[in-house]
Length: 252
Length: 246
Ligand SMILES: Nc1ncnc2c1ncn2[C@@H]1O[C@H](COP(=O)(O)OP(=O)(O)OP(=O)(O)O)[C@@H](O)[C@H]1O
Ligand SMILES: [Mg+2]
Image (cartoon, rainbow over all chains, first blue to last red; front, side):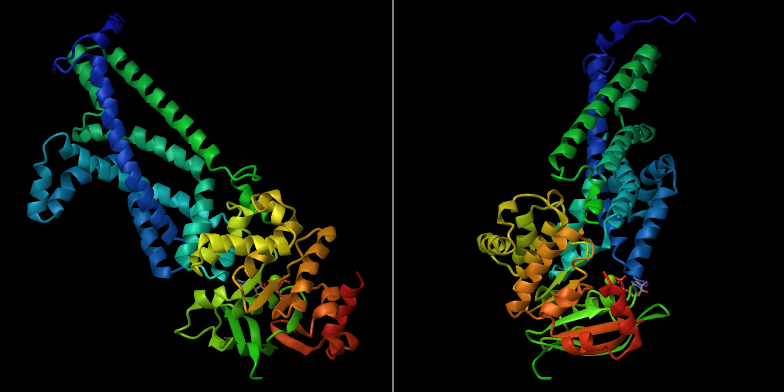
């Protein structure tokens, strides 16, 4: 193989005239993070809500929650991305659908990408939240409600703060997943990091440099996330409990 | 009985097809201390949880201080806030400091100011001898200390009655007395108490009445002296002879 290595390409100007290829990729990282973070906030709120509902014991609410989870869990991410981009605007009232289709780039890809990743991840968050709540001793709910807390208050002050401590590690991996999954948005034209690495390869023919640089950027980002979550885990650690899941054992 | 604080009438409860409680009736007067005992699985916990509506029941009536627990219009959280409950496994909130365990419901349910709640909490911690531990977390305390905090937590709501579900049976033997001492003091203060326990020493010392349950039924319901003198049912005699051996 006679590949012509040229790491200097990263500092060469990209044809769009916005600056170097490296700068071009880093702007891509910006879009990756903007997509992942927005989707994560929605996924966390929605997932916590649905995961909690699934533990309430109300049969219809539980069924509704289960249906939601099954729906989004069983459709491949790529298909969901296409559904949000191509199909959903057609299903909406014509005015709204047209407005969405006419959104200028990059918003026309950004909004569907965020919604897609948010809902896809929300069911995974919901699963974790449900498992976290169910791992707590039932007596904790009894103790809360026996003191006169409403069910809502018991969740808010007693159950969820404990459940979230327990599921912090799996939530960390979900957050890293959402960053990586955001690369699927390149299929609907969002120029995030992977999309830009591909564009760079097409413009410059330096395929290895383009994807090596993108890989390094992804790894560095993941590293920052891991360190951040470690810090968070330490910050919310309960004195006297060795692991978060020790909460259950300490009471028994 | 006009001054009944807790009145249970013809209470029956099923888990699916399985009947846990069968036609249970009893009354507990204001200031009365009643010990409930019986073999494992006889329905003691279920009975006591029906008193503050932690378990729903299908038949009969439970009235606490004139309010029907199963009534369609009953404000259950409000009723529960007036009845203290202490659990076998303490069930302190592990992610909160000891004092926060005592102030949370005072603030969120009774809407007391943080300052008032704190004062009340510290007073009660002093009463159970744990004021020095107010800033610790439950997992940093021994079992006996945790259960004393749990009692203080229940008292922080100024309850009109206290329910105990085997408060000492998860404790190491050397810690049982520190908890029983707190309960004895409470009984002597005139608190209305319904106590599921096998600590017959406690029953002898402060109980007014003893209820013996078997297979979901109240088999004996008599004064302490009658019960320890000679229980009428054979099951109760057998049970007593078993637990009094050790
Ligand atoms: N949620 C439940 N679903 C089905 N059956 C239950 C449930 N909770 C309790 N039971 C059954 O009801 C019966 C009474 O249980 P309960 O806990 O009231 O007994 P107990 O007298 O408190 O026993 P122990 O001394 O072991 O605490 C038992 O046979 C138990 O298996
Ligand atoms: Mg029990």
